Image (cartoon, rainbow, N blue to C red; front, side, top):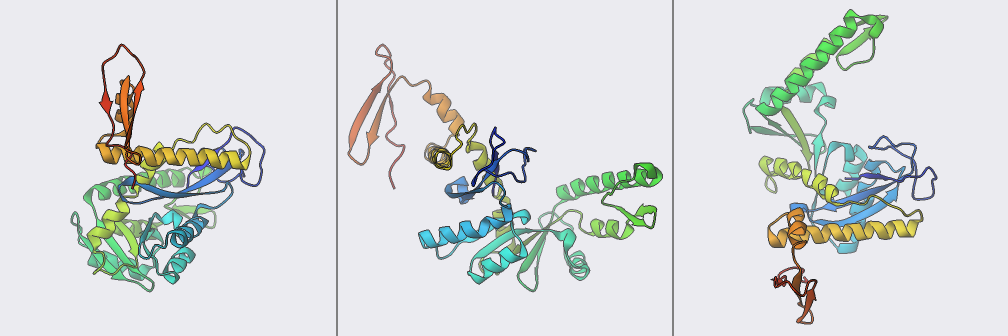
Amino acid sequence: MSPHFTFESFQEDELRKNGFSKDNKSQQPQILIALIVRQRRLSIAYEIFAGNTFEGHTIIPVIKKLYQKNGVKDFTVVADAAMISTENVQQLTQNNINYIVGARLGNIAAKLLDTIDKKISREDGRSIRIETDNSYLICSYSSVRYRKDLYEMNKQIEKAKQVIEQPYKSKKLKFTQSKGEQIMLNDALIEKTKKLLGIKGYYTNLNESKADNATVIKRYHELYRIEQAFRILQTRPIFHYKEQPIKLHILICFIALVVSKHIELRTGISIRKFVDESKKIVDGEILNKITNKTVTINAEPNQKMKVITSKLFTPH
């Protein structure tokens, strides 16, 4: 995933460029950060790109660098549909890299849609696997997703009907189509949408012996951990304007992210709670496990509280 970080400035340079902004600040320079997160939200690498870089063009360079630098032999890339293009999938396949990506079922061919409609069972947790030309398409059904999709579809149909009844308010909507100057409902698209209610799709090149349907779906749903990691990766405000200080600032933030997650894994509590509890400590001892020496910290001589934190920050 690649978030955009804007600067309170309007001057571009080689790194800070105007580009697509998720904060609606397209007129302000920004940078792009690609973060690689493994299971349990553990961040392992990042890359910085110029602010006008398209997100979909960041994933292959980042993976190749990680692959070459660390000699990784077997891993699986998990990404949402927005991050993966047909070209990216081809490059992953050529480099023998496994992948799990979200499928945009609204764009699939009519024949494949009919196959899904006939094969899938509309029961919670049920899934099917269909072999396509380049990979496997896994589809799962959820009644919760069905209700959500049905609500969204009906809301969009009502908006389309209002536009048809009041042509002077005409605008392009999902379920409308034009025939000359006449606007009408797109019945074919509505029928197609009905067939996909409650269904979510995933593409993967992993065969079932390596990862069954449940495993593929579970790994994809863990993408939310990247969102959580970026919430912790607090880089703003950035007061630097030159490239080197900006990169050093991001490095410090990344180190803080890694240390925060390390603390959570070792203590079993959230970093927020850990920080809140740490603020109460006035005396402490930190054991350096490399030198085996203890460093004592005394904030208030009158206080008797002492906390041993030797279990933290164990070198690996």
